[in-house]
Length: 162
Image (cartoon, rainbow, N blue to C red; front, top):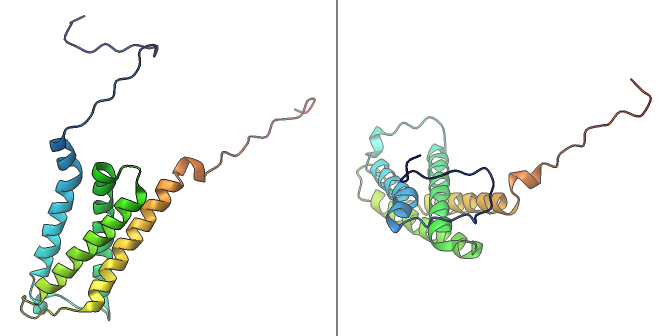
């Protein structure tokens, strides 16, 4: 066996060593997707209004709800695993505040795009979407999947029955 390869043992007599990830790996794993998604949001806001199809009434509200729900999930994940830790209130409020800020900047940016307008109701939908994403992640954090489903006991046959 080579000395430079790690050894795997079947028994766990040695304490497990935890590896602390570097700041660069934390950034790449959690914050880079957030920054890329912000770029996607502002890229979509750069599309002129005449080029956006309107298939049904209030379609833009559904687009904002979908767009910012995913943004809220990504942002909440980044805050929770890099800044917040177990402090759920902190990262929840930070996620909603930063998500609302990005939504507001997005609406202001849309004013500069030909054929687009800025609407306070769109911003309200953005904040609502981020808040719903945070509430969903808080629910999942408090009620993990393993605790949500209680194992059903298997019936044991009585003595003397086939």
